Structures are given as C-alpha cells and as structure tokens.
Length: 401
Image (cartoon, rainbow, N blue to C red; front, top):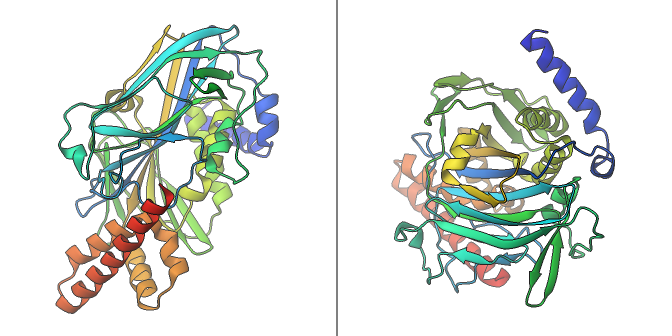
C-alpha cells in the first residue's frame, strides 16, 4: 500500500472511531499490553514573537480551569508576575498493568517550575521561596515525584469530582489502570498522574507571517517535526491547513475558513494515534483541549519530537515499563494582522466579549503591537490598553488564589 493510501485508510478508520462516545471508548476499546506500560500526552503552549521564536509572556494568566482538589504551588504573590516562554499544560501519565504493583515516578522540568498536580506528590521542587520573575534566577530545574503509586487494575474507583465542569475530567475517559496514592488525610484515587508547569526553554519550532501573508515554519531543533497544522478561527468561521513533517523549514498558505472544528479534531486524532497513543487516549486529549486549541485566533499546532520531550522533561519510572510512549502537541500562537486589528477594534469599542476570546494572549499581542507601532499617540493608547489588562489580570489572580 502506498503511503498516501495508507494515510487515507488510517484517517478513514479514525473517522469511524471518532463517532463512538468517550464512554464506549473507555469501556470497550481496551488496549493490548504486556507488562507495565506507560503512555503520556501533554501540550507546550507558546507565543511567537517578531522573529518567530517563543517570546516571554504571562503563561499563568487567564481564568482558572482546574477543579479545586488539584494541588498547586502556594507561594504568596509569585504567580502575579511569573513570566516564561512555555506553559506546559496538562501532561497526564497513564499506566496499564494486568496486576497490582507499586511504582515510583519522577519528572524534571528544564528551566521551569511545576505549578499544579494531582494526586498528592511526595516532593515538588524547588522548595525555596519564589518571587516574581524568579525563573530567571533559579539554577535548579523544577521537579515532581510520587514515591509510591499503587496500580490497581481490579479496584473499584471513587474519583474526586466537583459539580462545576472542568477540562480536567475528559482525560479520565480511557481504559487506563486506576491508581491510588496514600496521603496523611486519606487515599486519593485517579486514572492518571497529572501535573503542569511554566518554563523558559526554547521550543523546537518558529513561525512567522511573511509579507505575502504566508506562514514560514522553521525547525530549530535537531529532530524532524513529525507533523504540523496551521489553524485559524474568526468568529464562527474555521480553517486549517496540514503541513506535514518539517526537517528544515517550509511555508504554509493561510487556510480558507471553510472547515469545522470536528474536521480538525479527526485530523489531529489520527496524528496522535500515529505517534503511538491509544485511540481512547487521543480522543481524551482532543476533548480536553477542544475549546482551547480551536479558539479565536491563529496558531501552529505541531507534534513535538519525543527526543525533545525527553530532553526538557525527563521522566523516570521504577520499575521501568516495558513500553513508554510520550506524545506532546506544541501550540505556537501567531500574532497576525487580523488578530491585531480585532484586538485594537475591541479595545476601541469596549468589546469585552471579543477581548475575553483572546484572554491570556492579550499581553503578548499588545506588546507586539507596541513594538511595531511608530505613532506616539497610538503607542500611548496601546500602553493604556496593556495597563488595563495588567490591572484586571492581577485582580483576577488574587481573587482565585
């Protein structure tokens, strides 16, 4: 079978599976595995600066999207100004085992800090006090460890849940082995280990809009980028363009806004399965990030090379699994002329609904607009808009914490 026909057949099969409910995927499509198996997915979110590379921003801005039982780094005020180049979002680590056993897990984050996690961790570092901007001063990498995680394939689970909906729960809809972690206040049960973080590492891809309106994608890493997708949403109109692998550099035409989020979901799910995730894991990842990946604006979605993931996010599991698969999606937000016009107009007419769509990305969007502007009056107005964002964001962070 030719590669083209194989790809068509694979995506056709994915489309059939996509119509099955998450419940059926979790209860019927059980994976086949031998011995301890570990699968992980996660997202590296960044914003492309003027040179196309990841710029500094406030990765922890925006509304809280996690349930209250999730633990987080508690250091008064540090979140207000913690800047970074990468928001490591919702890595979830699944285990599959045919027998009950206990494992220990440790993850390190290069040039970063672990900010949220569940179940309760044995250790989270660094342990010293942090202050605004301290990612630039600290020398040790961030880390998190679970010393004793019991995998219990035959156990009845009672998973923590709040009445309020959260993207967190979609990740549970898999056939992964339930796990337990003992704490001083009782036992916590879950279907995975979860953690998040902020870092200053450089992402392996850059992307910038050319004078012709195309998007130039450049591989800045050592390994081939397995897959890319250029996505754009303007109101109810959606479009995307599949760019394939990137060894060196390539150019993507702006997509026509004639597709649907469901189309893109099927495309992405097929890519994730091709990288080694089980079908229900890939579906759970799409459902977790559907409202975020497919929100207003333009972005490059790409498969992060697993070797790169292992370099910036080394993982240690004892006893060692017979198979470990780690699939991360990179999200590089693009500040296009269309985005700049939409934000400028929204501020001018006090369109809060539109500004809310851009949310945590307003700061880097405004910073980019200021850097490009030459008119002093417009620069002053943009700085006023930026000050408004900072005031509202600081108040929101203080309220939610």
